[in-house]
Image (cartoon, rainbow, N blue to C red; front, top):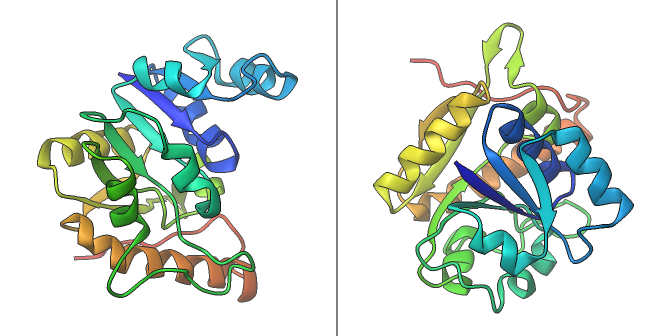
Length: 208
């Protein structure tokens, strides 16, 4: 599968690298694709990865991971034609000090993203864990649960498979409006990781 990465920091870099290493073709978006930082990331990801500017990244990809800082998200999406693309929204609408969410309860970042990227098939995913878990989703011998939600059944099936390939236990949490629940859930992960001493390599698990 052809996967583009918008936002090549800890989250985008980790997921993009892992998808490239399991056989997908990955393009990391950058305003400076020939920079030393991008060359280092591409080298780490391996032969299935390359870097390009945003428009070329979108054109080459069927699935796009959005892993930008919340404050920059609308600007990043402006002018990009994402119609028909599966857009994985991994963004949490965090305040700069990580203490709370900027939107919630009656709206979510995912629903905002769907407005800013008309025609995109938005799936909220990979927002309720940290990048250390993305790199290694097995904790105490168990697969960490990866929640995702969206309104497009086919797109959700693709994201569930991409999550499973990385070693997660994917769980469909329902329609895109469920992001109003998953984004505060991410804030719980962040507060436990940063303030309660949990550290970064842990996750939630669904037990039935």
